[in-house]
Image (tube, rainbow, N blue to C red; front, top):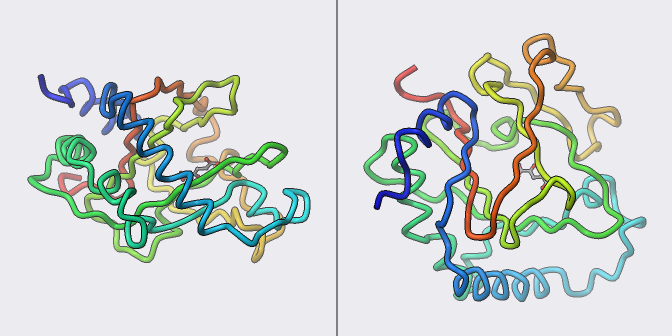
Amino acid sequence: MSLVTGDHVTRFERDGFVVVEDVLNAEELERFGAAVDAAVDVRTEGDTRKVSEKSLYEQSFIQCMNLWEDFPAVRPLSFHPRLGEAAAALLGAKAVRVWHDQALYKEPGGRETDPHQDLPFWPITPSDQASVWIPFEGSTREGGGMAYVPGSHRVGLAKFVDITHSLHPEPYDILADPKIRDIEPVWVEVQPGAVVLQPLGRRRAE
Ligand SMILES: O=C(O)CCC(=O)C(=O)O
């Protein structure tokens, strides 16, 4: 059975996010979860700071990028055929290339991540791009959760929100922007093994 249905494509294009179920199995979640844990441990060894001693940005998450490059056990996850299949099907592409992987770990006592759009952070021209969020243990509203503003990718909003707080101590309040302030954010619950895909760039067809 196809991983991605017409309904997934509709949601991806209309809402700007879609949950695709049953992408990774239990064995993969266990194996890749452990591999990413180990890689992040290596990348962060020597950092003994408490959360409260970190910058505001670092309090939002521990961030480790391109783990596929130096951790062979993570590589098959970053290039997982089912992730590629889902992204290609949603984008209507024959194939996809990996721009980067990144592990984001929320620490106990850390802070929220300020609402933002991802694309302004990336040195890449908008084209057909998607990101894939893989919550190894799933994600619930109770456990923190992620919310999306449905359709916000279609209203021509391209604002840099300084979630690092380094250039702008008070980052732009994108949820108050007139283009989206009347849209209610939607909290997304994700089962383990499911992933969430989001379009990032402008679609060819638009
Ligand atoms: O998990 C978070 O705190 C933020 C994740 C995020 O901003 C992203 O994936 O773009």
